[in-house]
Image (cartoon, rainbow, N blue to C red):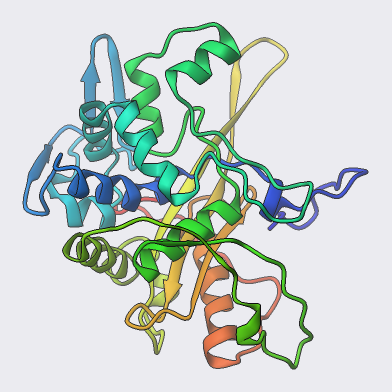
Length: 322
C-alpha cells in the first residue's frame, strides 16, 4: 500500500505486481529452510550473538535491533522469532550466493510471473554474473551477506512475497497467479483457483520447524501486538526496508523504513496467504502487521476493515526487531 498523502505519478503503477522492494527480514524463514534442507544447520544448532555484530575483514555487520549485548544463544527457531540479523549474516556467508540463489528461485524470486499483465516485474535475485553484467564489478562477501537478510541488490514484488509464503503454507506448490473478479458480496469460486506453476519437494519435518517459528513470531515476536487476541492462529514474519537519500552536500539522510509482513492463516489449516508493504510505514510490526491482521479478520471473520488501520509505536529495549 502507498502511504496516504504521497504524490501519485502520472502513470499509475500496480505496486503489487511491479513494485520492487527489499524483502528484508521476511526472507529469513526461507533462508532458515534452505539451511535445514541443504544441511547447513539443524534446528538444534546454536549461534552465539553476544556483541550484536559480526565482523568480516574490516567490515562490521550490525544487528538491526541495535544492542551491544546481542541476542545471546540463538538457535534456528529463535533466529526467526527474534529476527536475529547476525544469525543470518553468518549463515549467508557460509552458504554462499550460489546455494542461496538456487534455493530461492524455487519460490519464484527473481522470476517473472506468466500473468497476462504487462506490468509484472521479475524483481532481482542477484548473482555474481548479474552484478558483472550490470555494473562490471566483482561480487563480494558483503553482497552475499546482504542477500541473506533480504537487502542489497535483492528486490521482490509483493506478489512474489505472497506466492512464496503460500508455498510455505501449502508444502511446496507454486501457483500461477491469476486475476479474479468479484464483488463485495460474492466469494471467489473454486473454479478461479490458479494453475500449478511448479512443485518443490520439501521435507515435512523441516517445514514444521519453520512454520512453528513463524507462529511463534506472531505470538512472541515483534508482531505479536497485532495478533495476540486473534481467534485463529497466524504464521508470519515482519520485515523492514531501510532507506536513505543523498543530501546536496553529499551526505546521507536516513528516511523512514518501508514496513513489510508476510504470513498465512489459519496456520493449522491455511485459507489465505498474503504480503503487505506499507511505504514509509516504519518497522514491519508498526504498520504492515496491523494491516495483515485487518485483512485476515475480513477474510476469516467477515469483519469490516476500518481505514486507516492504526499503527503501533516503536518498541523500546526489546530483543525482537522488525
